[in-house]
Amino acid sequence: MSRTLFALCVLALVAHSQAALSFGQCPTVKHTVENFELQTYLGEWEQLETTSQMWHFGGNCPLANYTLEKSGKVHVKNSITVFGKEVVQEGYAELVGEPGEARLNVVYDVPIFGHHNASYIVLDTDYGNFSVVYSCASIGPLMKAEFGYILKRKHNLPPWVKERIEAAVAKSGLSRNTFKKNC
Ligand SMILES: *[C@@H]1O[C@H](CO)[C@@H](O)[C@H](O)[C@H]1NC(C)=O
Ligand SMILES: *[C@@H]1O[C@H](CO)[C@@H](O)[C@H](O)[C@H]1NC(C)=O
Ligand SMILES: *[C@@H]1O[C@H](CO)[C@@H](O)[C@H](O)[C@H]1NC(C)=O
Image (cartoon, rainbow, N blue to C red; front, top):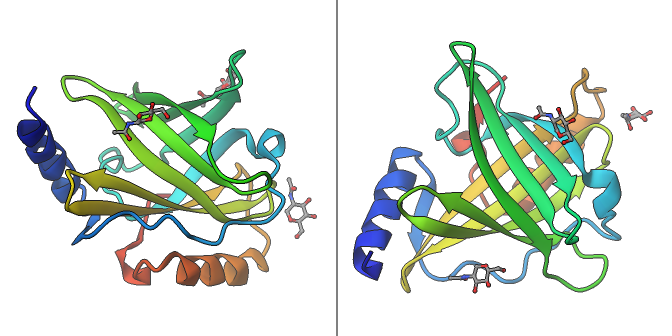
């Protein structure tokens, strides 16, 4: 598929998902959580709030599941249950930052479109309760699509995390009101 057609398709996809589209390159510097422990971060997360509506068509909570592959890559599985059927998006992620930085590159296999790369930057997490993630994908040479995710583990959150979440969202540079509650 030609690059232009690919870019248009991705554009349509993200426009539909109401991602924050803008001109310019994805930022390479975003302050991540310090001394990131990938092992502790793995496992299941619920997508409490996202700026992406792509996974919001069942009314229930989208899940993210991060597991370590033998290759050392992180297997990424996003899923949502629609009318009792699991719809899945899979890919893999790799640490790409300096040691201790929570900076990853995620590659999704998108049917027809091929690969779709995005950054995955953990702005803040306590590993056991919450995580705030900033993600950005280049669209052609000129544009970018930015996403935000507020993830939670599968239990009720203690009240103190609210403040940490709001601080991290503020650091993301994304507008707070672009986040929509998923569960
Ligand atoms: C997450 O992955 C683990 C390990 O493969 C698996 O046991 C678990 O069922 C998965 N959870 C979901 C929601 O897919
Ligand atoms: C996507 O990520 C893969 C794996 O990190 C890398 O080899 C490839 O060059 C990336 N492609 C783009 C267009 O950034
Ligand atoms: C969630 O936060 C509480 C502190 O409010 C902490 O005690 C607990 O260990 C955290 N949960 C997990 C699973 O780490």
